[in-house]
Amino acid sequence: MNKVELKYGKEIVSINISGAKSVEILNEKPMNEIKDLKEAFIKGVTTDMVASKPLKDVINNDDKVTIVVSDLTRLWQRQDLVCELLVDYLINEIGVKCENIVIVVAVGTHRMQTEDELCTIASKSVYDRVKVVNHDCDSDNLVKVGTTSSGTEVYVNPLVVDRKVIMITGTVHHLMAGFGGGRKSVVPGVAGRQTIRQNHIQSLSKTEKKSDPLVGARLLDKNPVNEDMNEAGEFVDVAFGINIVVNSSSKHSALICGDFHEAWLSSCKYVDDAYGLPIKKEADIVIASCGGYPKDINLYQSTKTLFNATRAVKKGGTLIMLAECSEGSGAPDFFKWVEPLKKGVLDEELRSNFTIGGYVFYAACENIEKSNVMMLSSMDPEMVKDMKITASNNIEDLLDKVDFEGKDVYVIPYGGNVVPLLEED
Image 1 (tube, rainbow, N blue to C red):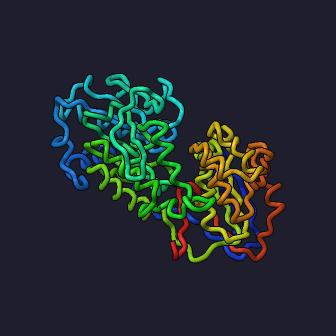
Image 2: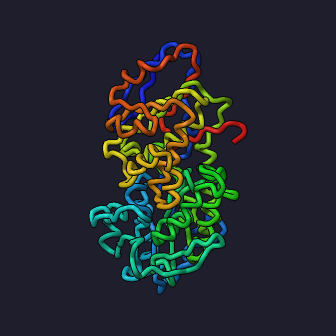
Image 3: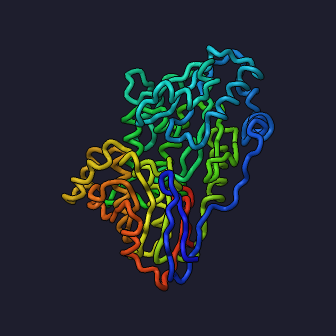
């Protein structure tokens, strides 16, 4: 193999790898693709539930129902299609009145969605019939529902209290929580800003200037962030969970429905079986694409590829990442952490003024230390220079610095999805 073609933004980039000793493409395992989404949904809520009664036995026709969905950054999971099926089922099959249904978009600390975006997220059919609202993590009417054993004071949106709550979530590997989806729709999804901060700061080691080694993709057992989220999630009485799993082309692969926690755990196993990819050794060179637009829309989103690809490269090796980042950093505070990094006080500053964007920056710097990281990007190379990333908008400029002769190479076309796993993992 002399060249590979990978997605970059809305384009395809060709990379010459002549001279490499070996080249291996790392893709997710073949995944089922749902052919009839309505049929899969009906089975999920009537016969194939995980540890739950059918939805019609959980929801009554006179109940007030809150459906929680993710924001626009998760639209790749096409929750709008599932949301429409769910609302139709509640109204037509169970008899719930439109005025008794509300959709809450779990924005966490992300920006509020516009009305057009709310319509897109819920689907126009749903938006035209029921109320669709943003969660506001800074609202003064949040309700305290409990305190976790680690001290996180759990404040949540009042619309998930004293109502029948149905969560539609998408399950993926996650940097801090092990897996996304499920209880993440409570914290950070519909929680208060301080609740989110108290939970997420547990990503940092309590004894050393580094991330807690129990925190990371795939890690659930004894992961302090996950366990705290689980406790917080139990304070909200979620009547039913619908977990979406998609393949790397964003096609629905599974709808795993039922008990909020147990169905989510089943979806985690499904995701790990598909995207957790065993490798026998680390490679000299790893070339990883985020999968093109919108997966490489900004650096914040593109770090998922950095974290995954770092698992596959040798210490001191070379990682070439394709991340256009047409919208820059993606998190408003992302690059403000460059100054404390340059001064050698990043850990101290993050502990004092923790933000999610700050932690992603922190974890990115930790991962970059392992290898020589190069990035094809439209971003100004000076913006990432202090992070020890060599960037250029010309792939040839980067390849001029790489010697493929006699090297073992991994190519990861969808770096944000595939999680390489050594035997010890």
